Structures are given as structure tokens and as C-alpha cells.
Length: 265
Length: 255
Image (cartoon, rainbow over all chains, first blue to last red; front, side, top):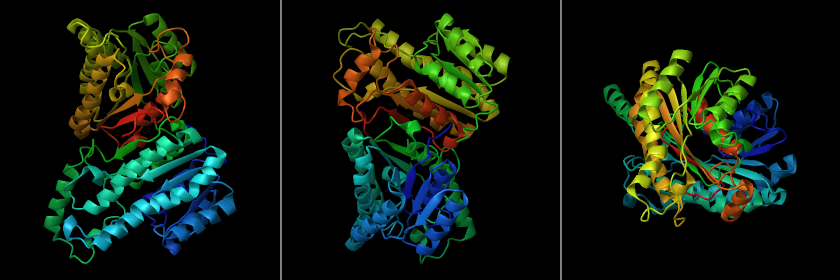
């Protein structure tokens, strides 16, 4: 199936981690024919590696480091991408993180943590989108794919504030889809379940790993919560993200698609 | 993007109408690499045309007449396809229709029956017949066609249809949950208005354009919009997605 990416320019945020969704999405966009894939991350060294990998696939690329929770950095990053590639057809908002420890009740978290969590996951995504939209509106074309989270429909994992920030992404997706439909701009959200990335690391930071027996039990219990019996892989997320970035899905907008092995239905 | 459909056998119901979703889905599955695409419809003449079109793409096909609201017809249909092609990897439940345009409180329970049978029982019957072979092979993909009407209110006529289609959404999730352990996925594609025989009258596109005035994207669905989403769900590229209801409706359904 030809995804019709010839001549398209994409921007992928959170593309630093070499085992993350952003990296996988950026590479798949390049493989499927995008002309250029600009990548950004707070970690400049890692995102350079992703840009090099995109170029190795024959697409143009630029690594433009930025902290997306800072509006001025976002504006400068997007301006740079536009200066180099002249347009942005596809925006994949992947950057985000869990900023609090596992299983800390909402009311026991520092309120500064709440603020930081919203600033990064919600405002970060909104800053990037806001900076990219004028160029998309001008050309009457654009596709935005946001990465949401299965945690918005899970209550046992103890990631309350993170889940709240991601639920807001679901609604942002719909608001944008409704508002921008007339401008030829689509916006959808992919909500992954737990996957083999660096993502959960912060939850375990500073805590000793559980003894092997307990870990095996925890793992078994977790896998049992996925009807398909396995965790997600970056490729699972990249495939649907890239399909949603393509005109093959040109009539789909405002949708939140859970990619979680049946864990969220 | 290679959908990895090489060697796969698909069954598409409701594939008769030459302007319908089933026809478009069957042809796309063939074009994207399926080895064989069996097609069924209550109208065998139309369905034969679809099978011919698939064969022109260099793929195997048979057209089988079946009324998908009849358990006997469905059992014979599935037996014939498995006898011919040895397996069914992909089942696309497209057959359906608005049987009664009478608001539910004015309709007789017999009218309700026709809508529920045609739009819900039909899928349950085909799944019931196909699942044993999919379980045996420990692999299978089911894509149900739902409807954006499940989330629209006040259109009066056709509301039993919407009720039946809401049943399809839940049926999708039940099958997804129950069959995941057997390597079987089940998802639902819910279309917005498209210029198919669902739209009465000769000027189908004109009617769709009128309906589309309130749709954020400003247009109705095309057959290709629905076929693309269906083919993606039928492919292992969506191997971690199950139990999803995906609205393909230009933003007219948002949640």
C-alpha cells in the first residue's frame, strides 16, 4: 500500500531515545517515502543519532534539540525546521514523560509535580502544535498524530497525574480535529499500552528492583491484563502512527485509537 | 507499506453491490496481496461480478450466494470456502442494511427483528461459523463494519438500525476479549455517510454532500476511506490492536 509520502516533510518530537516510539516513527516515515523527517528531543546527542539513521535511509533530516515544555524553545525549533524544509506536512507529537513516582496518591504528590506534568505532556504538545499550525493552515494541508496513553482508561497503575495530562491530549485531539477540519488538517491520537521503551524508568528510579520471583509474578500479572498476551513493541505504535499520518486515512479525524492488545476496549 | 497479506485467504460478506464497501474491500485485499478473496451476497449476480473483478487482479475468488441472516446458509457458505481454500484468515463482516425506516415506537417488533437480524445476528452467525477454523489455526482477523449512526440521534428513521450497530460495537469487544488467547483479533470500522446503496434515490453523492455540510472535514466518506481502514485492521501491521471501534467519519463522531 503506497502511503503517498513522496515530497512530504515530517516533524517528530521525542525522537531521541533509540528504543522509543519517536525514533521508530521517524525511521518508518523515512522508509515509507517522506522527503524529510526533522527530529527533536531534549537530549541533543541522542536525537543526532536518530537524524543520522533517517539520513542513512535516504531521507533528509535535521536534529533540532528543544525542551518542548518551554514555548520559546519550541518556537525556535519549529522556525528552524520551517527555514530548512520550507513546510511541515506531518507532525507527530511523541515527546512526553511520567514525572512522578509509581503509586503515589494524587494528593500526596508535590503540586509542583502536577504543574510540571501538565507543562510537559499537555502544554508541550500544544506549544509544538500551535507553532506548526500556521504553516499547515497556509497550505490547507496537515496531519497531526498525538501520542496519548492507555493510562487514561486504567486506574490501578498509580500514574494519576500523568493519566490526567494524557486525557487532556485526547480532548485536545478532538478539539483540534473539529476546529481544523475545514482547513484540511486532520488530528488523531494513538494511545499505547505499556511497551518495551525507557518510559517506565522514572517510576522505578531510586527503588531497588524486586527479587526475581516477585518480578516474575508481577510480570505474569501484567501480561495477563493484556488479552493478546504480550506487551507492545515500538513497531506496533509506529505502524498505526504512520498510517494515520498518511492520506490513506484521509477521512479519519478526531479519533483516539488504543493500541494495547485489548487491554483498553 | 507491505501489509503482509501474501498467502492469506479472506471472506467478505455483502460484497455484491458494485458501489458498496464490501466490493471495495474485497478488491483492495486482493490488490494488497491476499491469495484468495471469497465473496458472498444475497444477490449472486452482483457478487459474481465482484469475484470476476478479483480474478482480473490475478487472485483466486469464489462467489457464494448466502443470506447471512440464515444459520444454514452461513454454515454452508463457510464450509464451501474452507473446502475450497482450506482456511479463512480474514473475515470482513460488511453485509447489512437499513431494513426498517420506521421510528422504533411506530414499528412492530417484527420490523425491529429485521434490523437486528440483518445487522447484528448476521455477524454473530458468520463469526460463529468461522471461529472454529481460526482457533484451530491459532490466527485470524475479523473486521466488522459498524456505523456512525450509533452516535447520532434524532434522525428517527433507522434508529433500530443504529441500535443493532451499537450491538456490533459491543460484540466486537466481546469477541476481541474472548478470542485474543487464540491469536484472533476483532475490530470495528464505523463509517460516516458514503454514496453507496445505503443512500436511497438516484443522486447518492448529492445526498451525501448535503449530509456532509455539518461534518468538520466538509465531505462524506468514500468507499476507499472505509476499505483502507479495513485492510489495515486485516493486516498484521495492526497486530496489537483489538477490540477497537474506529470511526471513519471526517470528525462527525468525536470521542
